[in-house]
Image (cartoon, rainbow, N blue to C red; front, side):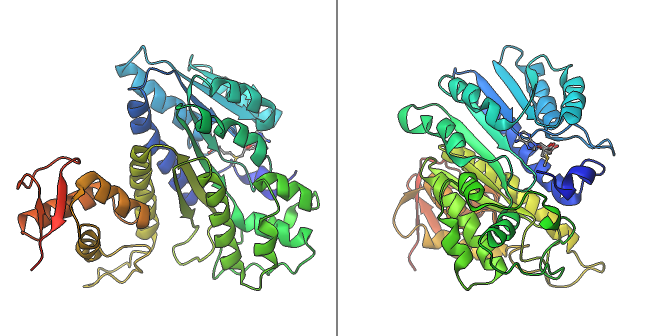
Length: 385
Ligand SMILES: C[S@@+](CC[C@H](N)C(=O)[O-])C[C@H]1O[C@@H](n2cnc3c(N)ncnc32)[C@H](O)[C@@H]1O
């Protein structure tokens, strides 16, 4: 599949790609520290690796991963961690393998992600696996084959996690073309028009798209009479629903080119069986949202926050949300987790915990120990007036 993005993508890293990197980097270090408490060896897979570095010297995902691991290994040299980076384009592979040579724990593989799924699936039997799936558009994703890795979650207690760039706008455009339905003109008011799939060479096929998302469920969404942004969101939700069949915790985060866009470039979708992982990923995605909010900051300071709450959530909303979750005595950790699940990407862990502490101080909540400084196991409840 040839795509416009192939030619220029690695010249200069775009600001939205940087937000994706922030999420990967912010998550990886605490993830590895947490997962290292299990004795299993750790495998990080960069399934669509790219060349490792952009022409403007910005690091690509393989180097972000390898440098994070090297940093951890400098403190814990015996940690059993390895990295596999897969790249299909020979030229990019050769740059990649030259760059990651210096990391003895990393291996570059030339070929398609699909060629290595069996090998990764084998490793998932006795390794903790973190799979990073970052294709251009949706080409190269084969749901059922990827699911052969995830299926271990149902039969073992191994840790398997996935962070996937899912390009729903591209899928919807391809799907509409395949179904011979009208494709909406790209609209710069609601989306970035730079890399719209106008240049797809291979004609989209229904079968191929079924393979990408593991079934034909997407067709009903595309045939419905809703608008393009709604189709994009429903499709992304559909992918999350499918992942939820394997992973207890699934979340999504839109990567938008500009703050006012209603259609993202793509969404990052994360699946894990661990609630701790969801908390870490929430914090990483809060950071990304804050970077996007910076782009919308007015040049002159204003008295009130003028940016919409999806960019800058109102922290004043947090106390009533906490009250809602503490009508009966509930462990603090459960309260925080439930709020993160329901208001994903809005409030960081520390903000929620800090707000609970403040409410305990002010007597709006009480803890079962009667103390303000408590741990996650201690139950808290709203003080009825
Ligand atoms: C979006 S880029 C990855 C960027 C990289 N993750 C980064 O942040 O630096 C997608 C890469 O996947 C490669 N690719 C395309 N199809 C592939 C496949 N089936 N398997 C593995 N790599 C593939 C492309 O050549 C391209 O380098």
